[in-house]
Amino acid sequence: MTDPAVPAAAAPHAPPPHVSYLVFRLERRIRACLDEALARHGITTTEYMALSELRLRDAPSSADLARIAFVTPQAMNLVIRDLEKRGLIAREPHPDGGRALRTRLTAEGLRKLQRCDRSLDGIEAVMLADVDAADRRRLAETLTLCARALHPEAHPLPPDLHSAENPPPTRP
Image 1 (cartoon, rainbow, N blue to C red):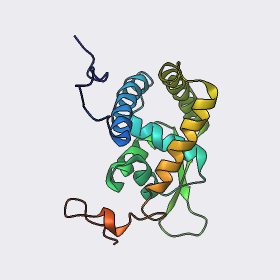
Image 2 (cartoon, rainbow, N blue to C red; image 1 turned 45 degrees about the horizontal axis):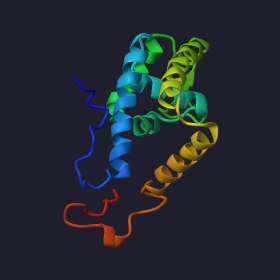
Image 3 (cartoon, rainbow, N blue to C red; image 1 turned 180 degrees about the vertical axis):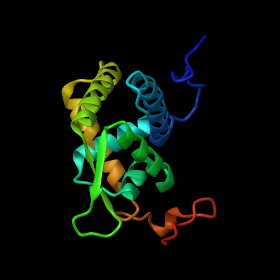
């Protein structure tokens, strides 16, 4: 049986696949491996993303975490509530007052995150085994440039790239 993640030989005269298609397939494969690895740690991929972001940023809002994890704010609120119950994060009132809560990683949350990071390191080691260090750096830089280029606030698509199938984004 063939692995659906590995493309079969191309048909004669077939155009090469779009880079975005290849990136999408890679993302789906990484996600499947990550879901499986994180499950062994009792963590979902969305929880891992939230914990990782809490390590990187000083008390991001729940809405920020939702955008980063590609989930709704309501779903992120459930994730945050569960992580807090498990002692992986702590929430405290914002110093400026109001209803906003600051969310921070606990020491236990950091330990759990570091164990999960080692699983991701293993996935990346397999994925990049045949890629040398210079190409790895170049790949990381190129993917970062691509992500920045498609960030709607930074670089909206030119009007000529919009069509009936691909209308311009609406701003709230």
